[in-house]
Length: 315
Image (cartoon, rainbow, N blue to C red; front, side, top):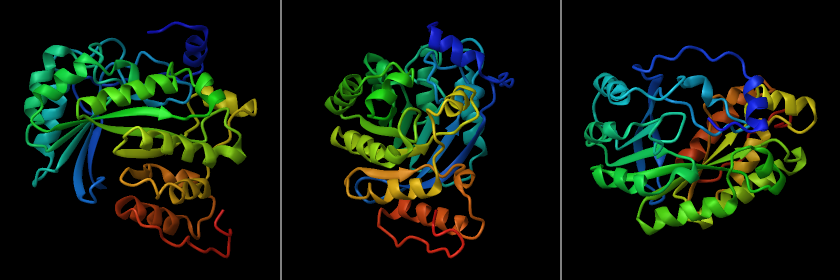
């Protein structure tokens, strides 16, 4: 692991990591997703257990789902086979292999496991994996070569706010992101991008504006899909920054604003992450209807009128 002062501080503030079984996936889900050509895909997301990412981002909570040490050889293929065996037909169009780390990092995904993983992924038309921009390179091309389906790489851009970029401890510049995006485009590999809503060091009143700016930046660099993810507290460092006034939690209205303002970036598909959106809700009367509206827009890409609420005014 990288050992800077910031890394050490962030790690010290973390709660104890739960034990993770390297031979069992955390779970899976099947969802419908819109693609840039307007088609709707069925996508199977598999949450694999493996080595922790070497980068220590200030906002990250995915380390909870990783193991100490490198991923054992054979473990990822075993996990994937178990999930696929338990997934009812028909076979979805796409499989997303999310390992809470970098798919092209040999410590996280042993190179000797790639043929078995590719064989298991053969029935799928598209395969999405996640990676830091700095690990995109020759091994990406090797993975693309052995897959039967087309490869898509999901990269966290997070933000374009200059102060926030420096404080995320992600070791990623806009130049490096653009280089990775260009590399993927040059080799006909699709790009999926993650953008944060309310990262630390972005003023609350500017949060939506900077999220929209980051989405536009990714879209201009060829992102097929951009997912907006509200930052979650609870990892220690984010809570420290909130106490210092450097972080303001996102709101449901902010998430709505961000998506509504990003519907004009076609053909890039822009969606919002609704995995735990109810934590953003402050009104028991309208929150479910507002989250359902966001889910519909994720799928259709069409604007809808906001939900009116006499109790909270839609805040």
